[in-house]
Amino acid sequence: MTNGTRWRQVATDGPPGARQFPILAYDPLRQTILLFGGGEYPPYGGPEYKYRNDVWEWNGSTWSEIPVEGPLPTPVIAAAGAYDPRRGRWVRFGGTTDIPNSVRTNETWEYGLMPQ
Image (cartoon, rainbow, N blue to C red; front, side, top):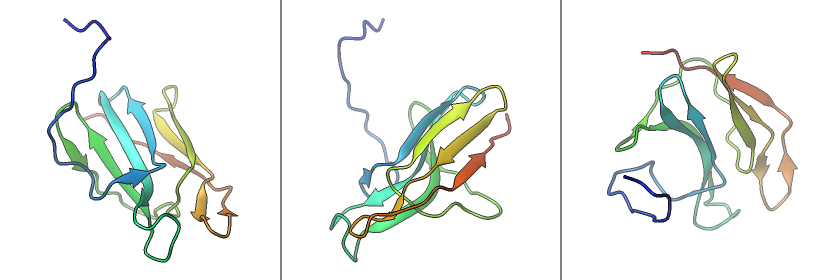
């Protein structure tokens, strides 16, 4: 039984590279956690920094990349996101595409996963 007072590290293969500022949201339809984008270090904000726009799913034991069809959102970090349970959509807003120059976007994107 879980009492909510302890952390436990889970051995797993996860998304490639350590991520900074991704979006995480719970998807109650699939009962998974979704991860979108973020940045890969090193160096933070430098020319080698990779802004990601991939989608991953955590099912409680395994990370899996979700293939996405159609246009993809602009790769960003530090965007805001949440799951909209009424419409079954994951919503992403804003973010930055270039840390050193403070380039921000006001794009709004929706992503919907269909129940299996």
